[in-house]
Each structure stands twice: as C-alpha cells, then as structure tokens.
Length: 143
Image (cartoon, rainbow, N blue to C red; front, side, top):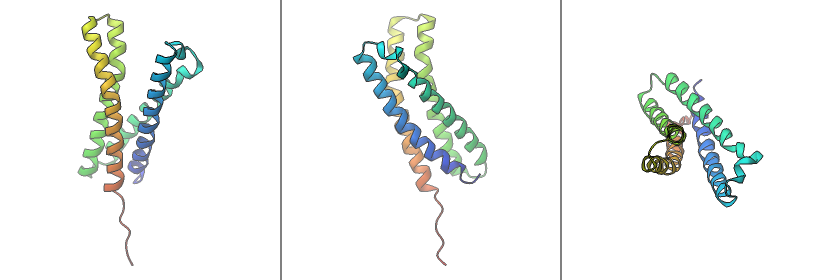
C-alpha cells in the first residue's frame, strides 16, 4: 500500500495526457463533421474518459485515506481531489443547464467555464502528479 500513491500519480499523469488528447480530438472532429462524429462508434470516447476520471477520483480518495499520517502527501492529494471535483463540475454543469433550460446568457457563461477549466484542471493534475512523484520518491541508501 506504500506504493499506491506513486501508482495513482502515474495513473493521473496517463489520465491527464490521454483524456486531454482525446477530448481535443473529439472536439475537433465533432466541429469538422458538424456533429455527425458523435453518432459514430468513436462518439463513445467521452464515456471512456469519464470512466478514467471516476477511477482516478476513487484512487485519489483512497490515497487520502492511506496518507493520514503524512500531512505533506495528504495536502497534495487533497489538491488533486479539488481539481478532480472542479473538472466534474465543468463536465456536469453544461448538461444541467441544458436540462434546466436556463437563460442563454447563463448557459454561455457555464460553457465558457467548462471549456476553460477542463484543460486547466488536466494541466494542474499533471503538474501535481509530477510533483508527488519527484518530491516523495524514496532516496537510495549508500552502503
């Protein structure tokens, strides 16, 4: 269980890079195909990204529980969890605004928040994971 934080940090790096590339690709192809892309089999890629997000979120919660005695690690994991929650809000709020039939101006602001915060949260998760890996690596003992 000591290496779980390291494994989670590596997973978060892979998740941040993969999901960023997939979401940008999906966005470009959706705009280029005028929405037809979402009706193809590749339109299921956002659900794959969502699954990866849920796995990463659960792993970060487990890391928070494992690192009870290490305040420095706990602080970094808590920051990662905050960025995961911001990303969840950015992904869910546009759907809620469409279902609730909100004011157009409010929907535009929500979409701008989502479009701006998703790449930023992915970058922050990537940087935090690299910091966790570098800062808390085990030092080799010289005999």
